[in-house]
Length: 226
Image (cartoon, rainbow, N blue to C red; front, side, top):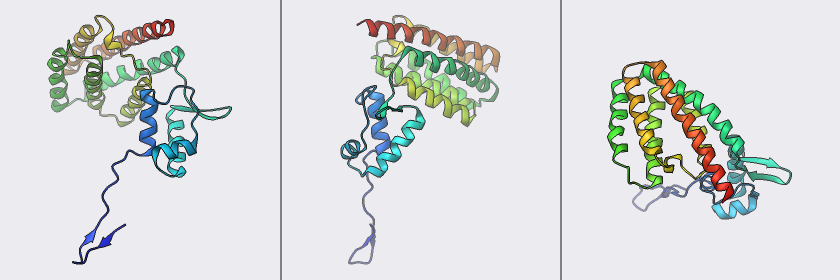
């Protein structure tokens, strides 16, 4: 509410810095705080988010559209994880990442190339970093490839797929030898994009994410047996 001071100055309320109901519930799903298969009750979530039920209802609608939750026999639940979903995500992601790489080779500008090149030594310097740091920097690099495609729809689709993979906490970059191999492929990919060799760039990206898929499935199997 806007108020007026005794001096006649308008005063605006401080901004609400709390995360929205959508952001808070989404992050809880991605972090595993809300577990796969867990029921989502509007009233409980509203109390947890400290909001009314209306923004929670709107948030749940968006999350269902995102595919992070589903409608079960007893209402909305957090979507379960499965190896079939991993295959589905990667089957699509391999195609889209290869397409983004081809587009980047054709459409990249000098600034795109400069930003990608800067990432190569940065990633190489993180050999002893923790898996979370490696995953964050790796994601930053791949977002640069997406942006260099200069295709908004493609960037949006890849972002949604990446979000879904966030529900699987084990990063492929923790797998023995993967970080070094991934960095070599990253450099080869930037070389192909710089040379405007779209076919080569697409092949490298496709191979890169096919390997990531295979490792992700191995990690799932290991976790399932634990």
